[in-house]
Image 1 (tube, rainbow, N blue to C red):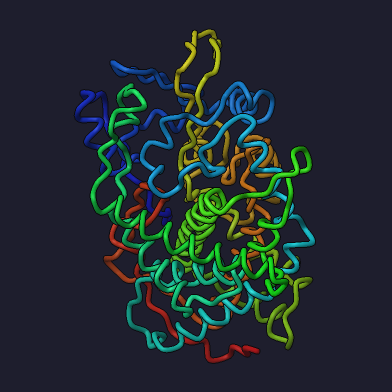
Image 2: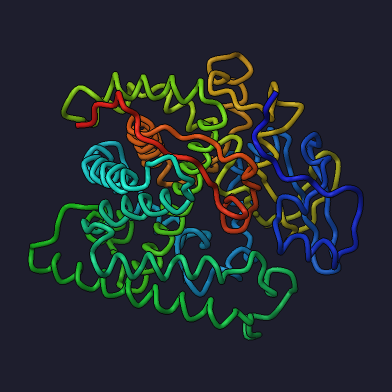
Length: 460
């Protein structure tokens, strides 16, 4: 039986320095194999302790029952601060709650309907770009999914296509930032005082500064448009004009720049990763690709496409869900114990790192039937339904669930259907991608697929 590619876990114990070297290369293959079956594991360093929790009750405790007692780890922001500043991704407490009260209304159900035309246009643009490459030769598909995911972000957030000069410059700088951003910053490993420099690489600092300058220009322009009454009704306008119902405050320019940076990181990077892996899996399992293509042709191939049709893309949705199970874009989440705890009769000291790993939870041998197999139909089974409730967290869960989860579950199946309706994707022999995790789970050397046009596709 063909199984989707999975990193080879390390064998046995290694020294701290060896572990750090492995971690910098890829945090997934640095982990021991036992995490796929353990309910909890403790890791000790000279500077802090970490507790990786796979037991559903513990995951539920941290994310849903007592989230305020397990805030985002301060170590997470160490490597991301040059780009993300004080964004909703790294804040805690009242600051985070105020930010969410302003951001969340932009992603409510009715607003998602309003963003659909922009998503559709971006998807149709991706199909048009792939036509010039669909001659059966190998295509690095992550580059294509990265392009369309960025196009969706720019169109829905600022009503500009990626071809717009400012959007193209942000996209180029962001790709350069990804290449320069290490997995671990010194401040994430050592208990450094706030005044101590974090030694971010020169390229990391430069690209982050450039990206923030470009985003500042976009948000400043939008602020003037809002003031003059000429702003388009998109996500940026909605967020910038929303007042916190408790304080009456709005985001200032600097804080809005922080939020746009995380929208791009979370909305673009995660969508690009999931879509690329979904296309690879469909190439690896052509029977599922044929089923999805038939559904897409049935639902989308009759003329004008509207928002109501997305709910009919059931196979595409299940394929996307299964992709998020096997390749969760954010493979690990790190919280911090705000007070002493006891997990599974083990003392967890205040300040300890509590790690929740969607990667290991989604492939846990004591939870999922055939955890390493690709089976989009599993979500209709008793085991699949149970695990969806207790062991499936690609968007986190509880009060810190990703605000864009609903957005992603419309964007992913729609883009997947548009692309598979138009093209056939086939594996490139000898080019199996190796999953590695840095900011998100990507192919170490990209994901290469043969792409050819479907002769029977009717695209409107």
